[in-house]
Image (cartoon, rainbow, N blue to C red; front, side):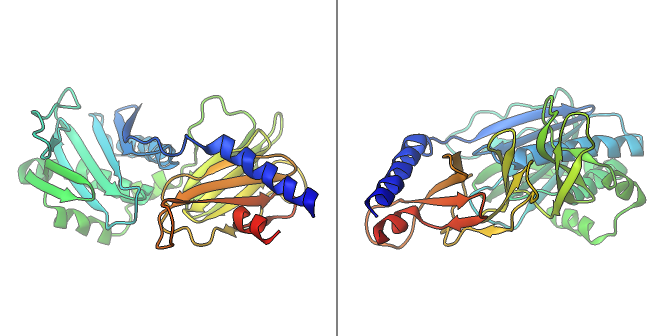
Length: 329
């Protein structure tokens, strides 16, 4: 029993060393990438997989523009409301992408683009290709209507204090009631891999028809599809042989390139208390992963509370709370 306690304390100490002092640093940032005539920008707070997903949507938007014969610039601007779910909002305009911030005596807005172009903005916790492509298609096919009906509005929701140009937001939402066009269906049938430079072996995923298929790749062999899921919330490679894939903010799959069972069951993390940051996942040896997070709750004592889970990869078993396990011993 004493040796077992020492083992648990060793694991707990190791986890603290790996995580302490790194999880509290935070500042929102922008990431931008170009795909032909499509510029994609996302504002977020952490290295969420949503960054790679919107880049996939940018590549799809470029293909749709090509399908529709549109060669001028398109700007897709994603504002990631990552702290909680929210009703999404959409804006379409034809300008240089300026945002005038109404808080803190902001200066005159600076143009993002060199010339007036189609600008499509989305504010949401999660973004999807179908929505993005429908917005792009409408803008391309109704450019005259966009130009003549846009006006400046104030948007003061979801941590945004903006003055921006847009056409009527209620009319924009009516776009989603219409069925998919043949052009959008063609583009959505395309297979787009997760944007990883020089990816040659290991685990990754591709997008197709608004779903995500996890696959493994080895040298001189055909890719092996592992599982198709509706969403990828976070994607963390543990090493070249294993990956942990969160399909929501409280559930994950473990993928191994070797062994008979390539993917685990869907594991649920209980009582996350609206935790919204990416989990800190570490390989602590012995077929074990630690999953660490902190949260605010109504429990007594200091806040935030900290919690460490242990996932036994060989047994596909999730220990929900290492602290409580130690206390029992």
